[in-house]
Amino acid sequence: MPSRIEIATASLPPAAAGTLVIYVAEGAAPEGAAAEVWQATGLDWARVSSAAGFKGKQGNAIDLVAPAGVAADRLLVLGSGKADQDGALSAWTDRGGSLAAKLAGVKARNAAVVLDGEAATPARVAELAAGLKLRHYRFDRYKAPKPDDNGDTPLAVTLHVSDRDATDKAIADRDATTSGTILARDLIHQPPNVLGTLEFAAEAEKLTALGVEVEQLDETAMRKLGMNSLLAVAQGSARPPRLVIMRWNGGKTDDAPLAFVGKGVVFDSGGISLKPGLGMEDMKGDMGGAAAVTGLMQALATRKARVNAIGVIGLVENMPSGSAMRPGDILTAMSGTTIEIVNTDAEGRLVLADALWYTQDRFNPRFMINLATLTGAIGVALGNDHAGLFSNDDDLSAKLLAAGLATGEKLWRLPLAAAYDKLIESRFADIKNSGGRPAGSITAAQFLQRFVNETPWAHLDIASVALASPSSETNQSWASGFGVALLDRLVRDNFEGK
Ligand code: BES
Ligand code: MN
Ligand code: ZN
Image (tube, rainbow, N blue to C red; front, side, top):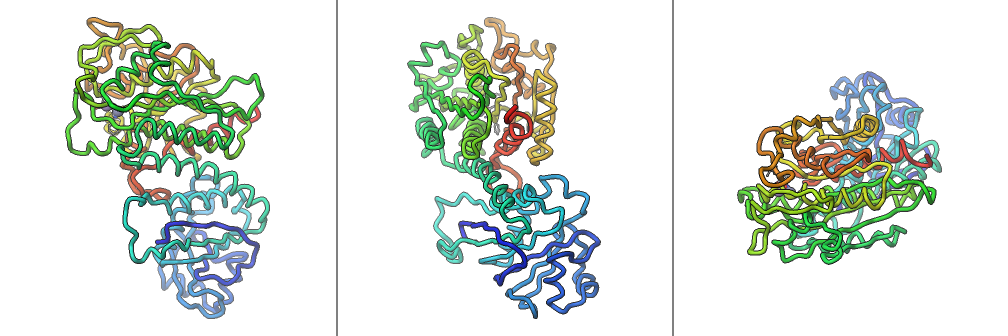
């Protein structure tokens, strides 16, 4: 498969191409421009579709090689599913993903796709283009090229549409978000020897080219602010901690910003409470929250979102060493709350405790959403189809849940309740950093809430959706980039210019 994909638009009818693609809905025959293409083949639709067992379902395909009357080596007829499901944007992202798979399956080098008809609005075609790119993505920069990779020749896909200008605009706008998702995936995939705290911070600095203001707090600055909770996680590692603050000012000057906070543990060994060896390599991805925040900031800046947004990421490495924090240690967080460490592997909440408090204190944001690969327990509760949502605000939750359905980055709300505080009561300090096995994800969220005041806040536990992602229509790689599309959609639909 070519390593790059290039997507362009053109008007109808389609020009000559290696692979020509038309869509047919469930139970229907080709319509509009697709009907013209089909007619040119001189074939009987009823006969061919029944012989091929083609019903128009998503995933159904008829593959005609060297068809008569058509200027293409191959005509692919793809099912687009039930017409009444066209309303969901995520159906179009999935359709794009599925198309990328079909094109790879026939080793296409260039393709022309017919997309006309009322359903194919510019926004939906832009989703299809996003799906194509996201499905095409591979993280293979450390692998020798395969002989059939066709060097650097990209897969060229031309989308033939009725309203080219509007579609081009929609694609460019949506592509900002896609690139953000891909940045998040790349950061997560990078091995932990390559992407440490400083290297991650340097990646965030690159956003200055897009007009994002980037600030870094080093250990001394954080020590002055009293961020002893975050610093305790970093103290066992040879890599220095950083708090990176990214600001995108696309809104009105005095509008309170939206704030996004990410857990950025570049490698989580567990510390002195060392993790078992099996699968520990996955903990290179324990900065998935910070990666999503960085990808989101890139997306907002690239598409010049009319909103003020802050991204704050806590970058640390959790390692066992002579200088590492110990079970039994008691720390005083920036908020003044004392924390007894009972498990050094419950480190993400220690990082977020100070990052959340700092963000709330300094920026007084309109809302604060944190993303974190926080608990293994969230996967026990929800598997990998939904991320966990915890919030002190019903309105923010409703908006997040809706953005989840629109993007396919789905959330499920779990409870916060004072009763769970009992599980994190400490004998010696205000709280302890782990409540043990019962309700593991909830007690982690409950811990975070101790560092949030009245600000509307949501915590997304993405441990089971960001990493080791199951193959989907829009992702075949290990990291999904979960959160970028979701939060970009949240901003687009609710907060821009408002
Ligand atoms: N980074 C892990 C959570 C995690 C696990 C993320 C699997 C992705 C995949 C987190 O720091 C952690 O170790 N959590 C502990 C908490 C426990 C010690 C209370 C866990 O989930 O076991
Ligand atoms: Mn841990
Ligand atoms: Zn962790």
